[in-house]
Length: 202
Length: 202
Image 1 (cartoon, rainbow over the protein chains, first blue to last red):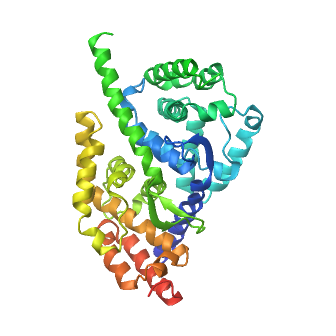
Image 2: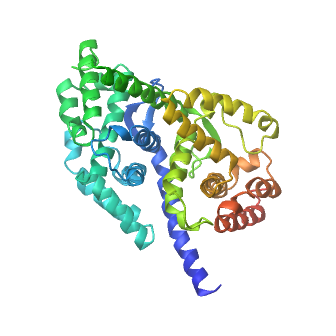
């Protein structure tokens, strides 16, 4: 095999090892129920649904000049660290204490399966999403938070009631949505008010 | 409510009805097994895995000047018609006879939930993917076909054996990969040869 083909094969093997590794995301279970309440969704399903929502709802981002491909890439890979670190429930304050450390280790291992240039690209994207400072990270983060509120509202707050969640907790947790999309934040506030009046939330 | 806010609310409600409708994709089961053989994957999981693979493997597309966002959008929505039409197994020739008609009806209903401009954008994208004539449709289609071959190979051909699939059937079915990515087609041919020698394929 000529030298450049050897290089190509090894590069491809690294890409393939990442692609096969992240298959496990299909088994990382979140607290959120499907809209028909039949089961809890997994991270792969959530990442797909979030990516579709990002392209369909882009017009509601606060910033009109967005790099949507960057947002979609972030959405697609934002949860792969949970293969090692597990899903941390939004309202589990104890588990959030060491979440950052667990997820950073996971990012290093999982994106580290990729060739160096792609490792850098996706590690950087993941950190950008986590920090939430750029316009793309803010909008992507807004949709990430919006989805479970929608699911909880549409499933009569079953998981909110189960975990004894209050309206104030949901509003506090989801306030950052406003930085990415004032429109979606307004939707969330309306859902929370309705949920509380219907007894879906404390 | 001023007229423009009324319009915005109704537009958003249409977008939301699409987003909530496609939640059902998380329950459309494919023949393909997860890589640890623990269960069959669903269309939402497959669409996510395919979208990630599209961005990670883009350099192997035959055409170097690709609109990757368009490819990712196609991947994200390519299977939503299966909510109505069901998953048609790649090697089920009977079911393929009326597949086109069933899926066109489904596309009309499901993308029809969206506001007119987005309905047109996503219906057009879906037809473009189905026709497989543009460079983006060819590459996206190549990754769509590559994924289940990879899964079947990595799970010792369990589903191939179960459905009595031969090497020739896999090669015939997957030949269009070559039009989108000669590199991935070469990978598929190698996997099929190895699979046959190991008894994963007739």
